Amino acid sequence: MNILFCGDHSVEDGILIATLSLIKHVREPLHIYVMTMTLPSSNEAQREPVSERLLTCVRNELLHANPLNTIEAIDCTTLFNQTPPSANMTSRFTPYSMLRLYADQIPQLPNRLLYLDADIICRQSFGTFYHQDLHGVEFVGVLDHYGKWFFHHELKVYDYVNSGVLLLNLAYIRQTQLFAKARYMCETQQRFMPDQTALNKLSRTKRIAPERFNEQHRVQSDTVFQHFTTSFKFFPWVHTFTVKPWEVQRVHHELGLHDYDDVLNKYLELKQHQ
Image 1 (cartoon, helix red, strand yellow):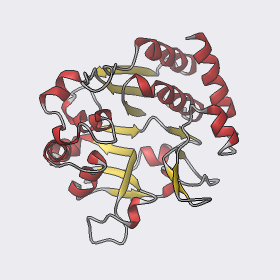
Image 2 (image 1 turned 60 degrees about the horizontal axis):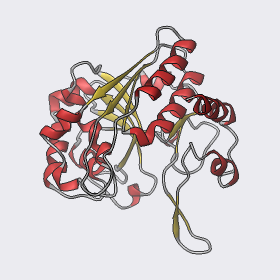
Image 3 (image 1 turned 45 degrees about the vertical axis):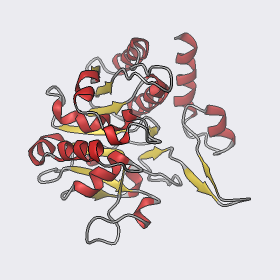
Image 4 (image 1 turned 60 degrees about the vertical axis):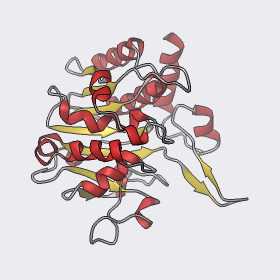
């Protein structure tokens, strides 16, 4: 299985946790790709790429589980700087969230690729989902829990996909130039959620999968991927609420979740030895 993560050093904990959860549930070889870059900033400290320390740690765990497992970091600094998403460089979402839109320009990336946000935990195997027929489909995704009610781009009741879990048909994306068009939109049009909006607006051949493949709200018995997104709370007042997987105490006490204790305990153990 080919897995894609994107980000800088700030998402290293998430990549480690997500990978540990994949190791737990996937029996076939895992080939993990991490698109990263160095990003200078005039307003804050320079953003650094995913570290070699993290890659070594993940690689050791992967190889211990299966000698055929691999991980590879891809430095996208030059590629990104050639056509940056200029209109959205200061949005509330970091430019690293748009790195996946450059995947079509990286020759070593395979045609079938499962993109995962770094705040996702795998709960069970997903072989049938991963190996589904992708003929004529650019990507497969799950409806956005909140956005599906407000955003529409096709003649369907619900069509707005959350981009945290995307099964990509990279060969077809290169053919339709979906990512190239999305990069141009991010370069020229300011959007609230730049890359997610671009993918939803421009794709004409996306496939909607059941919510259990990107559960953004409440875990169910059949949930495959839990996505730790921002949610809304309505008591005692309306406010946003966010807990990430690496905030282990909050996962336990505020979410009441102990389903991942084996994975999170392993994560904490590895962190102590880094």
